[in-house]
Image 1 (cartoon, helix red, strand yellow):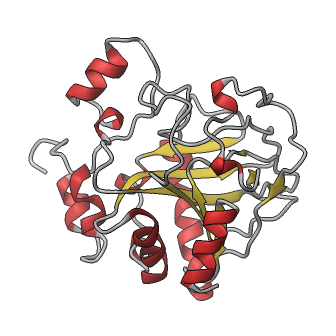
Image 2 (spheres, rainbow, N blue to C red):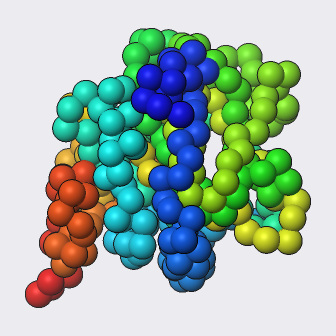
Amino acid sequence: MNLDQALLHLKVDGWCVLEGIIPPDEVDAVRESVERSVPIHRNPKAPDAIGHVPGFIRYDQSLAPYLADRRMLDLAEAMLGDHVRISFTTGTINYPGNQRGGWHADWPFNQNNAGHIPAPYPDAVMHLTTLWMLAPFTRENGGTLIVPASHRANNNPTGNNGVDPKKPYRTEMQATGPAGSVLVMDSRLWHATAPNRTDQPRTSVVVRYAPWWLNLDVLMPGSAERDRIVEESGKTENNVPPIPPHVYDALPEDVKPLFRHWVRETEPGR
């Protein structure tokens, strides 16, 4: 799929799959590293049989060499403009037996988040969600459930739009692809966790790309925006920990600009 084809799919359907971003002879090493790291740092509030690690890049940098792949960045820049940056990295594993999740759109369109764009939100691309497939995504192992073209709606099932987030939707499908591929979604697209009916984990890292102008501070622990919007209001929001300088310094040079905004001194002497 070339750039023009990917852009057309994103415009019309709200999603596409870029194959071969991670070379076939390298993807197993990345997957094995992620599968070691996720259980160690797993969010204890994650649903059963789901491995979920916010701020994953601070714990595991095995995916870092691929995050500035020109095919991925050319697409992100065409959608979001120059100076894109990464807003989230989340280690995500669907283990065998996990349950189907609810329909939602991602931050900042999820109406359950404290820091969200109120519905009806404008018809504009403001954020991209990517799932880096470290295992093949299949219908059997929990390839992500999506509703094609739902990104053009001005609300989603988290905003009481009349769609039951817990029930199947008539036009739903699963996004599938070989290991090493990247599922790219407009973050407005309705999607949900699919059950893994195999005996092997469906391993991925979720990486979200944002334009330079999108304020991410509500996600950052200790920021003034988070204190005012989340802590003082008692509402809930994603918690994305900062990147320590020593982790940032070890990133590939072409990847550093994607994370520069997220670096904070978090450990004495480091």
